[in-house]
Image (cartoon, rainbow over all chains, first blue to last red; front, side, top):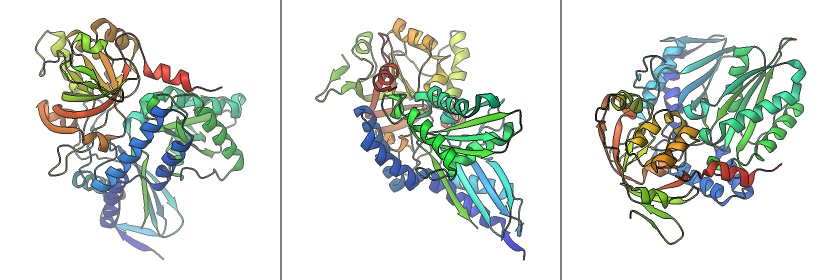
Length: 281
Length: 191
């Protein structure tokens, strides 16, 4: 049974997601601030966390963005194979939602039309869109407003199979350490391990959509996440890099099968302005 | 003297700043800034560079002033500004020593600066402040006036003159080589 979804429904959903993501941090982030306020030894660190909580409250109340960098819209769309999209191509519908959300929502236009001539597109389009075809008759749209300062600290490395699990842990930790104060800690590391060059990078973004504070469904990978997070929080960088125990809120790993010769690891660095929302049509 | 210490140890900073004002600030000091700040980030710096190189006047007189690295989000009707937190200072590293040599006394951003910038802070008696990255909604409350003074075609990257009252910041790099990021990390690192 084919179900029709009109492009205007996609546009409306994306518009709303862009606005809400920028005004209202998800509850998992707010809980992370509260947990860190209990464990953080540094007075400067606790001061930063308190201000970030105030910032979240003020943003949602006044409907102004939590951070002035309202991000690059990264959109993961899972399109059911039994859906027939009518009215406009999917990418056009999504980008129209971004355009409306950013212009009507007083969100910053941060995208330039070319990396070389660097002229601002004026409406924060286009989004980066990742499309998956899945069974079913629904369209799931996840969007992230990805900040540029932390994105600039994202990294990729091809390890050898001999470097193994310990090599992966050391590389994630190295990415967090070198991101340091520049990327607005407390950070979240989205990690893609396996696949090919581009698959690992894509997974590193997708991994960030998991609710913060929930365990990885794979116990072995969960143990790696916990160990790396603990080691990250011993680095001393702390909130905003002013020194402290809360350098990272989470390490989220997604894996994919890989070639016998490879161990690719991509790390997306995400700041505390971790703005993500989703809707199912 | 435009740097004074208030009860609670927070230092009040009122630009324009002199060498003596800068010398009164140390890494880790919490400050509140009242007065004019100029905004400029990547694109505005890139436009000012050829002017500096050819000795032409800049659109703003930087002597004694503070540049805030930020690109605000648009204001809702009735508001002065939208969200206005700092961007990463390191991206301006290649421009900063030249602006300091022209008399700029302070910059506000987040994230570490290069050794060349730290050396220039020492040589020209200047300071790098950190504002809390990602706290743009809170920081907007301290901005009382805003006007675009140069490069309006750059949108959020235009140069703006802000008037701020008690804008909160912390000294990251002082003019004696002090670095809050280095000291802070050392203090809290655990094996």
